[in-house]
Length: 485
Ligand SMILES: [Zn+2]
Image (tube, rainbow, N blue to C red):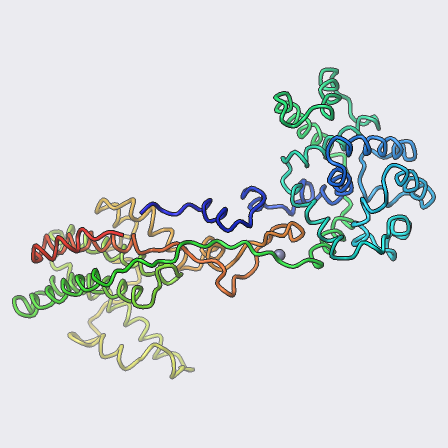
């Protein structure tokens, strides 16, 4: 089966209108386009959205000429700068703007620029007939196309910003650049030439950024207002839920382990090596069976399952490989594990406030630690078994990829590292007003990709190893070995 592609899921949901990288890019940087500048220039976006590119740019051209005439000290057509102008100047500007376009064009901004805070603006642009929902929708639709700083729409706005800077005299450019800029509003975005002009505009618009003083108060007011007004729009990632019927496979596996277990009890009941090997393999089998019985293949616990199956397999190979270098590696391996149990036991004995309902059962663990030898003779070694961590062990048995590609990834889930937390427990919100933040995935909107194929792959490797050592019945071995999803 071909692994599912993220892209496919995205588009199948049919919810997605902007490229993935837009909503995956961190945004809340004062200088960044979407966080720090878009709120200032959203008014231009509203005009372009209403009139379309060609008519919109003409109207804005007239507007910025008026602005420059009224406020020759302004270097950028920023909303916060306009709102900071003296009241009579603001009033005069708005009055002239309204001769170029009706007030409903930028009226949606009154949602944020309220009477109490910006009385002059509100007085000119308040439109009671435009209800709150409609104002929100217009703002969100406009922002959606502008959040990515490279869209055509964002570039059009950045062109206006740049043009205003040229009018204001803050920026000097080469004649050839000026010629290209003048052509920009007349050319369609599909025009070949635009492939060169657009990046030029974007980089030039950035040039004077360091001269700008960010109006933090306005930016905060904008995001604070817009983010609270609108609801989350969750963008969920749904991988295919594992639905492969593995009942027959589970039966065959059961047969394999029953066969090996009977072989052990009837032929070699005292074979320490066989006990350890079958113990480890059975642990893998049980983890796999648990995942199957409880349908954990798409869950976080499923990742714990595949991780331990890999670790067990690497350990098996490692023990076999190092067997000859040790007096009795099988016994050492058991003592090592029991030593770790003994350590916890000792801590438990010293702990005053014992929780009787804890899943650690002192009496039972004590019995296990003392099962065949007296506890006092068990060393407690808190280092890795054989002083090699799992990565080194994997390398020693030529399973570096298994470790690097799988085990490490799944370890993030077992240790609660951020990658795993982000992947499994947070869900993306597709609302531009929320800056595409992540919210807790309390209700399992996301799921994880199935671990079943990997579990089968590791089980196959484990079975091959067991077959080499103990010889499984041919027909049965062929069936389990060749099972695939
Ligand atoms: Zn949200």
